Amino acid sequence: MAFHEKSAWIMTLALLIGGLFYFGLVVLISNEMQQLAPPLLPLIVIYTIIQIILAVVGHILIAIWTPKEANASLDERDRRINERAGHWSGYVIGIGVITSLGLYLFTRNGDLLFYAVFASLMLSALAEYASQIVLYRTRL
Amino acid sequence: MAKRAVIRNQIASLRKQHGLTQAALAEAVGVTRQTIIAIERNRYSPSLETAFRIAAVFSQSIDEVFEWLDGKEKVID
Image (tube, rainbow over all chains, first blue to last red; front, side, top):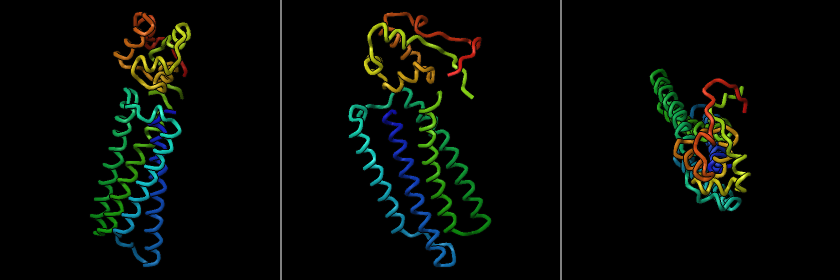
């Protein structure tokens, strides 16, 4: 498995764990409040710290596992995979933001707009790394 | 369904003839070992520059290493 594919796995797992943590807490707090909880800065800070820790620790571990590949720069196949994955994730963020804006037009709920755009960002990043994994494993 | 490979190559057999490992070929060409593996398995068609570099390592012309199937033959990965 290429180092960059391992990196994509790390980031996919980090995004999944972070996303489940963040939106899990949002659902819990909203249930407590009996309404959609407003976006909370401490929760976003904790989410960001979790993402950074998982990404850094994950990359240190795979660098220890495959030290020769850790410093390898992207070759032409890696770059082509990144470009294609970035292209697909662009569609995800685009559709997500348009959907979020449409949702706001109908609900006039700024909190919901925040969560929808934040989820779109997460899904876009997830789509990019998941696409990379798929492209590394299929014919390009 | 597997995609049809348009470009086939003789890299694996040439590499064995020359006693080269995938890692050694990758280093000589300037790509990762995984890219050499993908090319050998017809899962990735390299750029023209990389194709020339690979042919040069084996002291062969490009058409002796790579074969363009031109849609005439179906190859399943």
